[in-house]
Image (cartoon, rainbow, N blue to C red; front, side, top):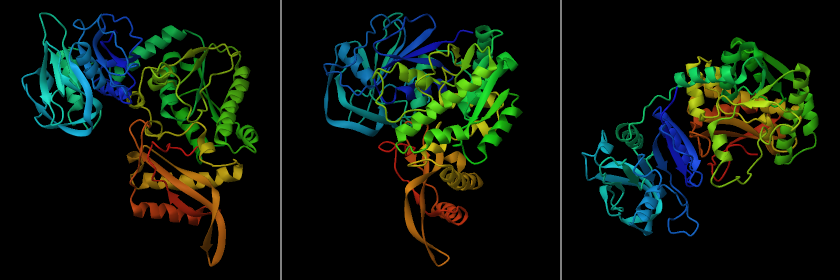
Length: 514
Protein backbone atom coordinates (compact mmCIF):
# COMPACT_ATOMS: atom_id res chain seq x y z
CA UNK A 1 0.00 0.00 0.00
CA UNK A 2 1.32 3.41 -0.96
CA UNK A 3 1.00 6.18 1.64
CA UNK A 4 0.87 9.92 1.16
CA UNK A 5 4.10 11.39 2.45
CA UNK A 6 5.24 14.64 4.06
CA UNK A 7 8.89 15.67 3.73
CA UNK A 8 10.46 17.65 6.60
CA UNK A 9 13.60 19.59 5.71
CA UNK A 10 15.90 19.78 8.72
CA UNK A 11 17.73 23.10 9.11
CA UNK A 12 19.27 22.09 12.42
CA UNK A 13 16.47 22.89 14.87
CA UNK A 14 16.28 21.05 18.17
CA UNK A 15 12.55 20.66 17.42
CA UNK A 16 12.80 18.98 14.00
CA UNK A 17 12.14 15.50 15.34
CA UNK A 18 9.23 16.89 17.30
CA UNK A 19 7.65 18.20 14.09
CA UNK A 20 7.86 14.70 12.65
CA UNK A 21 6.38 13.12 15.76
CA UNK A 22 3.43 15.52 15.65
CA UNK A 23 2.83 14.75 11.99
CA UNK A 24 2.92 11.02 12.79
CA UNK A 25 0.37 11.61 15.59
CA UNK A 26 -2.00 12.66 12.81
CA UNK A 27 -1.49 9.21 11.24
CA UNK A 28 0.45 10.80 8.39
CA UNK A 29 3.70 9.27 7.16
CA UNK A 30 6.66 11.64 7.05
CA UNK A 31 10.43 11.57 6.64
CA UNK A 32 13.19 13.97 7.69
CA UNK A 33 15.93 15.01 5.28
CA UNK A 34 18.77 17.51 5.67
CA UNK A 35 18.01 20.84 3.99
CA UNK A 36 20.92 20.27 1.61
CA UNK A 37 19.95 16.72 0.61
CA UNK A 38 16.42 17.13 -0.68
CA UNK A 39 15.24 13.90 -2.34
CA UNK A 40 13.43 13.70 -5.64
CA UNK A 41 9.83 14.48 -4.74
CA UNK A 42 7.53 11.87 -6.27
CA UNK A 43 3.77 11.95 -6.56
CA UNK A 44 3.44 10.46 -3.09
CA UNK A 45 4.88 13.64 -1.51
CA UNK A 46 1.88 15.79 -0.64
CA UNK A 47 3.52 18.51 1.49
CA UNK A 48 6.90 19.90 2.57
CA UNK A 49 7.75 21.48 5.92
CA UNK A 50 10.88 23.57 6.46
CA UNK A 51 12.10 23.47 10.08
CA UNK A 52 13.58 26.01 12.41
CA UNK A 53 17.32 26.54 12.80
CA UNK A 54 19.87 27.92 15.29
CA UNK A 55 21.10 30.16 12.44
CA UNK A 56 19.91 33.56 11.34
CA UNK A 57 18.94 33.95 7.68
CA UNK A 58 21.49 36.75 7.63
CA UNK A 59 24.39 34.51 8.67
CA UNK A 60 26.98 33.81 6.00
CA UNK A 61 26.74 30.04 6.62
CA UNK A 62 22.95 29.93 7.08
CA UNK A 63 21.12 26.92 5.58
CA UNK A 64 20.15 27.51 1.96
CA UNK A 65 17.02 25.63 0.93
CA UNK A 66 16.61 25.12 -2.80
CA UNK A 67 12.84 24.99 -2.81
CA UNK A 68 12.45 26.40 -6.32
CA UNK A 69 11.57 23.08 -7.97
CA UNK A 70 8.55 22.49 -5.73
CA UNK A 71 7.23 25.82 -4.39
CA UNK A 72 3.84 26.45 -5.95
CA UNK A 73 3.66 22.77 -6.97
CA UNK A 74 3.55 21.10 -3.53
CA UNK A 75 2.02 22.68 -0.38
CA UNK A 76 4.80 24.28 1.64
CA UNK A 77 4.99 25.28 5.31
CA UNK A 78 7.87 27.25 6.84
CA UNK A 79 8.33 27.09 10.63
CA UNK A 80 10.39 29.74 12.45
CA UNK A 81 13.63 29.84 10.39
CA UNK A 82 11.67 28.27 7.52
CA UNK A 83 9.22 31.19 7.67
CA UNK A 84 12.00 33.77 7.86
CA UNK A 85 13.85 32.11 5.01
CA UNK A 86 10.70 32.23 2.86
CA UNK A 87 10.20 35.90 3.66
CA UNK A 88 13.82 36.79 2.95
CA UNK A 89 14.11 34.69 -0.21
CA UNK A 90 10.85 35.99 -1.69
CA UNK A 91 11.72 39.65 -1.20
CA UNK A 92 10.55 40.47 2.33
CA UNK A 93 12.69 41.88 5.13
CA UNK A 94 14.11 39.96 8.07
CA UNK A 95 16.16 41.69 10.77
CA UNK A 96 17.60 40.96 14.17
CA UNK A 97 14.93 41.59 16.80
CA UNK A 98 15.54 44.39 19.26
CA UNK A 99 14.51 41.90 21.91
CA UNK A 100 14.72 38.13 21.39
CA UNK A 101 11.20 36.68 21.37
CA UNK A 102 11.26 33.55 23.48
CA UNK A 103 8.36 31.96 25.30
CA UNK A 104 4.59 32.29 25.32
CA UNK A 105 2.70 34.73 23.11
CA UNK A 106 -0.96 35.29 22.28
CA UNK A 107 -2.02 34.80 18.65
CA UNK A 108 -4.45 37.36 17.26
CA UNK A 109 -6.06 36.00 14.11
CA UNK A 110 -6.84 38.53 11.39
CA UNK A 111 -8.55 36.18 8.94
CA UNK A 112 -10.78 33.70 10.76
CA UNK A 113 -12.18 32.50 7.42
CA UNK A 114 -8.85 30.98 6.40
CA UNK A 115 -9.11 27.14 6.51
CA UNK A 116 -5.91 27.09 8.57
CA UNK A 117 -7.89 28.40 11.54
CA UNK A 118 -10.61 25.73 11.56
CA UNK A 119 -11.41 24.95 15.21
CA UNK A 120 -8.80 27.48 16.40
CA UNK A 121 -9.90 29.99 18.99
CA UNK A 122 -8.98 33.66 18.93
CA UNK A 123 -6.21 34.66 21.39
CA UNK A 124 -4.77 31.17 21.69
CA UNK A 125 -1.29 30.64 23.11
CA UNK A 126 1.72 30.00 20.85
CA UNK A 127 5.42 29.42 21.59
CA UNK A 128 8.08 31.70 20.13
CA UNK A 129 11.81 30.98 19.98
CA UNK A 130 13.70 33.27 17.62
CA UNK A 131 16.16 36.16 17.55
CA UNK A 132 15.17 37.41 14.08
CA UNK A 133 11.80 38.78 13.06
CA UNK A 134 10.02 39.30 9.76
CA UNK A 135 9.59 43.07 9.49
CA UNK A 136 8.03 43.08 6.02
CA UNK A 137 6.41 40.23 4.12
CA UNK A 138 7.09 39.77 0.40
CA UNK A 139 4.87 41.14 -2.30
CA UNK A 140 2.10 38.67 -3.07
CA UNK A 141 1.95 37.46 0.55
CA UNK A 142 -0.82 38.14 3.06
CA UNK A 143 -0.53 38.51 6.81
CA UNK A 144 -3.18 36.49 8.69
CA UNK A 145 -2.12 36.53 12.37
CA UNK A 146 -0.05 38.66 14.78
CA UNK A 147 1.24 38.69 18.34
CA UNK A 148 1.91 41.68 20.58
CA UNK A 149 5.63 41.61 19.73
CA UNK A 150 5.40 40.26 16.18
CA UNK A 151 3.33 41.89 13.46
CA UNK A 152 3.90 39.00 11.05
CA UNK A 153 3.48 35.92 13.25
CA UNK A 154 1.69 33.94 10.54
CA UNK A 155 1.45 34.76 6.84
CA UNK A 156 0.74 33.03 3.55
CA UNK A 157 1.27 33.40 -0.17
CA UNK A 158 -1.79 34.55 -2.04
CA UNK A 159 -2.62 31.73 -4.42
CA UNK A 160 -2.77 32.30 -8.14
CA UNK A 161 -4.74 29.85 -10.29
CA UNK A 162 -3.65 26.29 -9.45
CA UNK A 163 -0.63 27.18 -7.33
CA UNK A 164 -0.06 25.02 -4.25
CA UNK A 165 -0.49 26.91 -0.94
CA UNK A 166 2.46 28.37 1.00
CA UNK A 167 2.16 29.18 4.73
CA UNK A 168 4.71 30.53 7.21
CA UNK A 169 4.65 30.37 11.05
CA UNK A 170 7.17 32.37 13.08
CA UNK A 171 6.14 30.35 16.15
CA UNK A 172 6.54 26.62 16.81
CA UNK A 173 3.30 24.64 16.34
CA UNK A 174 5.07 21.37 17.22
CA UNK A 175 5.70 22.15 20.91
CA UNK A 176 3.07 21.52 23.54
CA UNK A 177 3.28 25.15 24.69
CA UNK A 178 1.45 26.10 21.48
CA UNK A 179 -2.05 25.31 22.66
CA UNK A 180 -3.56 24.53 19.25
CA UNK A 181 -0.35 23.51 17.50
CA UNK A 182 -1.47 20.02 16.56
CA UNK A 183 -4.77 21.40 15.23
CA UNK A 184 -2.89 23.94 13.09
CA UNK A 185 -0.71 21.19 11.63
CA UNK A 186 -3.80 19.07 11.07
CA UNK A 187 -5.56 21.92 9.28
CA UNK A 188 -2.57 22.58 7.04
CA UNK A 189 -1.90 18.94 6.18
CA UNK A 190 -5.41 17.47 6.07
CA UNK A 191 -7.65 20.36 5.05
CA UNK A 192 -5.32 22.50 2.93
CA UNK A 193 -2.76 20.03 1.54
CA UNK A 194 -5.23 17.12 1.36
CA UNK A 195 -2.84 14.54 2.80
CA UNK A 196 -4.41 11.15 3.59
CA UNK A 197 -4.13 10.05 7.24
CA UNK A 198 -3.62 6.32 6.73
CA UNK A 199 -0.34 5.71 8.58
CA UNK A 200 -1.82 3.60 11.40
CA UNK A 201 -0.31 0.90 13.64
CA UNK A 202 -2.48 -1.81 12.06
CA UNK A 203 -1.53 -0.72 8.55
CA UNK A 204 2.14 -0.73 9.55
CA UNK A 205 1.86 -4.24 11.01
CA UNK A 206 0.18 -5.71 7.93
CA UNK A 207 2.62 -4.09 5.51
CA UNK A 208 5.67 -4.93 7.62
CA UNK A 209 4.80 -8.62 7.86
CA UNK A 210 4.30 -8.88 4.10
CA UNK A 211 7.52 -6.98 3.38
CA UNK A 212 9.52 -9.10 5.84
CA UNK A 213 8.22 -12.31 4.25
CA UNK A 214 9.36 -11.07 0.84
CA UNK A 215 12.69 -9.74 2.14
CA UNK A 216 13.75 -12.79 4.16
CA UNK A 217 12.02 -15.69 2.44
CA UNK A 218 12.93 -19.02 4.03
CA UNK A 219 16.25 -17.84 5.50
CA UNK A 220 16.98 -17.61 9.22
CA UNK A 221 17.27 -14.48 11.37
CA UNK A 222 19.19 -14.13 14.62
CA UNK A 223 18.26 -11.30 16.98
CA UNK A 224 19.52 -10.24 20.39
CA UNK A 225 16.76 -9.14 22.79
CA UNK A 226 17.10 -6.67 25.64
CA UNK A 227 13.71 -6.94 27.32
CA UNK A 228 12.86 -3.43 26.12
CA UNK A 229 9.99 -2.39 23.91
CA UNK A 230 12.03 -1.87 20.70
CA UNK A 231 13.62 -5.30 20.47
CA UNK A 232 10.44 -7.02 21.68
CA UNK A 233 8.17 -5.38 19.12
CA UNK A 234 10.75 -5.93 16.37
CA UNK A 235 11.09 -9.61 17.26
CA UNK A 236 7.31 -10.06 17.40
CA UNK A 237 6.93 -8.64 13.89
CA UNK A 238 9.69 -10.91 12.61
CA UNK A 239 8.16 -13.93 14.34
CA UNK A 240 4.77 -13.30 12.74
CA UNK A 241 6.48 -13.06 9.37
CA UNK A 242 8.91 -16.01 9.49
CA UNK A 243 7.91 -18.07 12.56
CA UNK A 244 10.54 -20.47 13.90
CA UNK A 245 13.13 -19.17 11.44
CA UNK A 246 13.66 -16.38 13.95
CA UNK A 247 16.10 -17.32 16.73
CA UNK A 248 16.57 -14.89 19.64
CA UNK A 249 19.29 -14.49 22.25
CA UNK A 250 18.64 -12.98 25.67
CA UNK A 251 21.96 -12.42 27.41
CA UNK A 252 22.31 -12.10 31.16
CA UNK A 253 25.29 -9.79 31.59
CA UNK A 254 24.98 -9.79 35.38
CA UNK A 255 23.87 -6.16 35.26
CA UNK A 256 20.11 -6.62 34.90
CA UNK A 257 17.55 -5.65 37.52
CA UNK A 258 16.65 -8.09 40.28
CA UNK A 259 14.99 -11.25 38.88
CA UNK A 260 14.75 -9.55 35.47
CA UNK A 261 16.48 -12.34 33.54
CA UNK A 262 13.97 -15.03 34.55
CA UNK A 263 10.92 -12.76 34.36
CA UNK A 264 11.72 -11.45 30.89
CA UNK A 265 12.67 -14.90 29.62
CA UNK A 266 9.30 -16.24 30.77
CA UNK A 267 7.56 -13.30 29.12
CA UNK A 268 9.25 -14.05 25.81
CA UNK A 269 8.25 -17.70 25.98
CA UNK A 270 4.61 -16.65 26.50
CA UNK A 271 4.90 -14.66 23.26
CA UNK A 272 5.89 -17.87 21.50
CA UNK A 273 9.34 -16.57 20.58
CA UNK A 274 12.20 -19.03 20.07
CA UNK A 275 14.52 -17.54 22.73
CA UNK A 276 17.84 -18.90 23.95
CA UNK A 277 18.78 -17.61 27.40
CA UNK A 278 22.52 -17.14 27.91
CA UNK A 279 24.08 -16.78 31.37
CA UNK A 280 27.20 -14.69 30.69
CA UNK A 281 27.58 -13.01 34.08
CA UNK A 282 31.07 -14.28 34.78
CA UNK A 283 32.27 -13.18 31.33
CA UNK A 284 31.16 -9.59 31.97
CA UNK A 285 32.38 -9.45 35.57
CA UNK A 286 35.82 -10.63 34.46
CA UNK A 287 35.90 -8.04 31.65
CA UNK A 288 34.92 -5.25 34.05
CA UNK A 289 37.33 -6.13 36.86
CA UNK A 290 39.45 -3.15 37.86
CA UNK A 291 37.72 -0.69 35.50
CA UNK A 292 36.45 2.57 37.00
CA UNK A 293 36.28 5.01 34.07
CA UNK A 294 32.73 5.22 32.63
CA UNK A 295 33.88 4.99 29.01
CA UNK A 296 36.11 2.00 29.76
CA UNK A 297 33.18 0.22 31.41
CA UNK A 298 30.79 0.99 28.53
CA UNK A 299 33.29 -0.26 25.97
CA UNK A 300 33.97 -3.42 27.97
CA UNK A 301 30.23 -4.12 28.19
CA UNK A 302 29.80 -3.46 24.48
CA UNK A 303 32.66 -5.77 23.57
CA UNK A 304 31.27 -8.36 25.98
CA UNK A 305 27.94 -8.44 24.14
CA UNK A 306 29.70 -8.85 20.80
CA UNK A 307 31.99 -11.61 22.11
CA UNK A 308 29.13 -13.61 23.64
CA UNK A 309 26.86 -13.03 20.65
CA UNK A 310 29.55 -14.14 18.21
CA UNK A 311 30.40 -17.27 20.21
CA UNK A 312 26.77 -18.35 20.52
CA UNK A 313 25.92 -17.47 16.92
CA UNK A 314 28.75 -19.66 15.69
CA UNK A 315 27.09 -22.65 17.36
CA UNK A 316 23.92 -22.17 15.28
CA UNK A 317 25.57 -22.57 11.90
CA UNK A 318 23.76 -21.17 8.84
CA UNK A 319 22.23 -17.80 9.78
CA UNK A 320 21.73 -15.30 6.96
CA UNK A 321 20.27 -12.28 8.78
CA UNK A 322 20.77 -10.28 11.95
CA UNK A 323 17.70 -8.52 13.33
CA UNK A 324 18.14 -5.13 15.01
CA UNK A 325 15.78 -2.88 16.96
CA UNK A 326 16.90 0.32 15.17
CA UNK A 327 14.25 3.06 15.36
CA UNK A 328 13.80 6.24 13.35
CA UNK A 329 15.71 8.64 15.67
CA UNK A 330 18.79 6.44 15.13
CA UNK A 331 18.36 6.75 11.37
CA UNK A 332 17.87 10.52 11.57
CA UNK A 333 20.99 10.94 13.68
CA UNK A 334 23.08 9.15 11.06
CA UNK A 335 22.18 11.75 8.43
CA UNK A 336 22.01 14.76 10.73
CA UNK A 337 22.71 18.18 9.23
CA UNK A 338 25.20 18.56 12.05
CA UNK A 339 27.22 15.52 11.02
CA UNK A 340 28.46 13.13 13.71
CA UNK A 341 27.44 14.31 17.16
CA UNK A 342 29.91 15.04 19.91
CA UNK A 343 30.21 11.85 21.95
CA UNK A 344 28.72 12.44 25.39
CA UNK A 345 28.92 8.75 26.21
CA UNK A 346 29.30 5.59 24.16
CA UNK A 347 26.36 3.25 23.62
CA UNK A 348 26.89 -0.42 24.34
CA UNK A 349 25.42 -1.51 21.03
CA UNK A 350 26.74 1.22 18.76
CA UNK A 351 29.86 0.82 16.68
CA UNK A 352 28.88 -2.16 14.64
CA UNK A 353 29.48 -5.86 14.70
CA UNK A 354 32.80 -7.44 13.69
CA UNK A 355 33.44 -7.13 9.95
CA UNK A 356 33.82 -10.87 9.55
CA UNK A 357 30.18 -11.35 10.52
CA UNK A 358 28.83 -11.04 6.99
CA UNK A 359 25.17 -11.21 7.87
CA UNK A 360 22.51 -9.14 6.18
CA UNK A 361 20.71 -6.68 8.46
CA UNK A 362 16.94 -6.47 8.91
CA UNK A 363 15.44 -3.56 10.88
CA UNK A 364 11.64 -3.87 11.15
CA UNK A 365 11.22 -0.63 13.16
CA UNK A 366 13.62 1.72 11.39
CA UNK A 367 10.81 4.10 10.34
CA UNK A 368 9.13 4.39 13.76
CA UNK A 369 9.55 6.77 16.67
CA UNK A 370 9.56 5.34 20.21
CA UNK A 371 5.93 6.32 20.89
CA UNK A 372 4.92 4.68 17.58
CA UNK A 373 6.75 1.50 18.61
CA UNK A 374 4.60 1.39 21.75
CA UNK A 375 1.43 1.93 19.69
CA UNK A 376 2.42 -0.91 17.37
CA UNK A 377 3.16 -3.10 20.39
CA UNK A 378 -0.31 -2.42 21.77
CA UNK A 379 -1.84 -3.26 18.38
CA UNK A 380 0.14 -6.51 18.41
CA UNK A 381 -1.40 -7.35 21.79
CA UNK A 382 1.87 -7.42 23.72
CA UNK A 383 1.86 -7.62 27.50
CA UNK A 384 2.24 -4.41 29.56
CA UNK A 385 5.46 -5.93 30.99
CA UNK A 386 7.04 -5.02 27.67
CA UNK A 387 4.98 -2.05 26.45
CA UNK A 388 4.92 -0.09 29.71
CA UNK A 389 8.50 -0.92 30.71
CA UNK A 390 10.51 2.19 31.34
CA UNK A 391 13.68 2.70 29.29
CA UNK A 392 16.61 0.84 30.78
CA UNK A 393 20.19 1.44 29.63
CA UNK A 394 21.84 -1.27 27.55
CA UNK A 395 24.84 -1.45 29.90
CA UNK A 396 22.30 -1.92 32.67
CA UNK A 397 23.34 -1.38 36.26
CA UNK A 398 26.93 -1.18 35.06
CA UNK A 399 26.50 2.56 34.52
CA UNK A 400 24.57 3.03 37.76
CA UNK A 401 27.52 1.82 39.82
CA UNK A 402 30.01 4.66 39.92
CA UNK A 403 33.50 3.21 40.13
CA UNK A 404 34.52 -0.44 39.88
CA UNK A 405 31.82 -3.06 39.38
CA UNK A 406 31.73 -6.15 41.61
CA UNK A 407 29.06 -8.84 42.06
CA UNK A 408 28.57 -7.59 45.65
CA UNK A 409 27.87 -4.02 44.50
CA UNK A 410 25.49 -5.31 41.83
CA UNK A 411 23.54 -7.34 44.40
CA UNK A 412 23.28 -4.33 46.73
CA UNK A 413 22.08 -2.04 43.91
CA UNK A 414 19.61 -4.64 42.62
CA UNK A 415 17.97 -4.81 46.05
CA UNK A 416 17.76 -1.02 46.41
CA UNK A 417 16.48 -0.55 42.86
CA UNK A 418 13.89 -3.29 43.33
CA UNK A 419 12.47 -1.48 46.37
CA UNK A 420 12.25 1.83 44.48
CA UNK A 421 10.57 0.39 41.37
CA UNK A 422 8.11 -1.78 43.31
CA UNK A 423 7.02 1.18 45.44
CA UNK A 424 6.56 3.33 42.33
CA UNK A 425 4.22 0.66 40.96
CA UNK A 426 2.43 0.18 44.28
CA UNK A 427 1.70 3.92 44.57
CA UNK A 428 0.62 4.19 40.90
CA UNK A 429 3.54 6.47 40.11
CA UNK A 430 5.45 4.17 37.74
CA UNK A 431 3.61 5.20 34.56
CA UNK A 432 3.88 8.89 35.49
CA UNK A 433 7.67 8.68 35.33
CA UNK A 434 9.66 8.37 32.10
CA UNK A 435 12.61 6.62 33.72
CA UNK A 436 13.58 5.77 37.27
CA UNK A 437 16.41 3.95 38.97
CA UNK A 438 18.94 3.95 41.78
CA UNK A 439 22.60 5.01 41.52
CA UNK A 440 25.29 3.53 43.80
CA UNK A 441 27.73 6.32 44.63
CA UNK A 442 31.48 5.84 45.20
CA UNK A 443 31.29 7.43 48.64
CA UNK A 444 30.47 6.31 52.15
CA UNK A 445 28.90 8.29 54.93
CA UNK A 446 28.62 8.12 58.70
CA UNK A 447 25.33 6.94 60.13
CA UNK A 448 23.80 5.55 63.32
CA UNK A 449 21.87 2.29 63.35
CA UNK A 450 20.89 0.55 66.58
CA UNK A 451 23.02 2.93 68.65
CA UNK A 452 26.05 1.92 66.61
CA UNK A 453 28.14 4.07 64.30
CA UNK A 454 28.02 2.98 60.66
CA UNK A 455 30.20 3.96 57.74
CA UNK A 456 28.39 2.68 54.70
CA UNK A 457 27.31 3.35 51.12
CA UNK A 458 25.17 6.16 49.69
CA UNK A 459 22.62 5.73 46.89
CA UNK A 460 20.87 8.36 44.79
CA UNK A 461 17.31 8.00 43.54
CA UNK A 462 16.79 9.25 39.99
CA UNK A 463 13.35 9.78 38.42
CA UNK A 464 12.67 11.99 35.41
CA UNK A 465 9.71 13.12 33.35
CA UNK A 466 10.15 13.32 29.59
CA UNK A 467 8.49 12.58 26.25
CA UNK A 468 11.47 11.33 24.29
CA UNK A 469 14.49 11.34 26.61
CA UNK A 470 16.14 14.18 24.66
CA UNK A 471 15.29 16.59 27.49
CA UNK A 472 14.05 15.69 30.94
CA UNK A 473 12.75 17.27 34.14
CA UNK A 474 13.26 15.68 37.53
CA UNK A 475 10.01 14.13 38.69
CA UNK A 476 8.22 15.86 41.56
CA UNK A 477 7.58 12.70 43.57
CA UNK A 478 5.72 13.20 46.88
CA UNK A 479 7.93 13.76 49.92
CA UNK A 480 6.06 11.07 51.84
CA UNK A 481 6.78 8.58 49.07
CA UNK A 482 10.48 9.47 48.99
CA UNK A 483 10.62 9.10 52.76
CA UNK A 484 9.16 5.59 52.49
CA UNK A 485 11.63 4.59 49.78
CA UNK A 486 14.55 5.92 51.82
CA UNK A 487 13.44 4.15 54.98
CA UNK A 488 12.86 0.83 53.22
CA UNK A 489 16.22 0.88 51.43
CA UNK A 490 18.19 1.76 54.57
CA UNK A 491 16.35 -0.83 56.70
CA UNK A 492 16.29 -3.66 54.18
CA UNK A 493 19.51 -3.36 52.16
CA UNK A 494 22.61 -4.17 54.16
CA UNK A 495 25.47 -1.79 53.39
CA UNK A 496 23.43 1.39 52.66
CA UNK A 497 22.87 4.06 55.32
CA UNK A 498 21.98 7.16 53.29
CA UNK A 499 19.60 7.95 50.38
CA UNK A 500 19.57 11.19 48.34
CA UNK A 501 17.31 12.39 45.50
CA UNK A 502 18.68 13.80 42.23
CA UNK A 503 16.87 17.01 41.19
CA UNK A 504 18.98 17.79 38.10
CA UNK A 505 17.39 18.46 34.72
CA UNK A 506 18.64 17.28 31.30
CA UNK A 507 20.44 19.36 30.12
CA UNK A 508 22.81 20.21 31.72
CA UNK A 509 22.85 16.80 33.43
CA UNK A 510 22.15 13.49 31.70
CA UNK A 511 19.45 11.05 32.80
CA UNK A 512 22.02 8.46 33.80
CA UNK A 513 25.04 9.44 35.89
CA UNK A 514 27.59 7.78 33.59
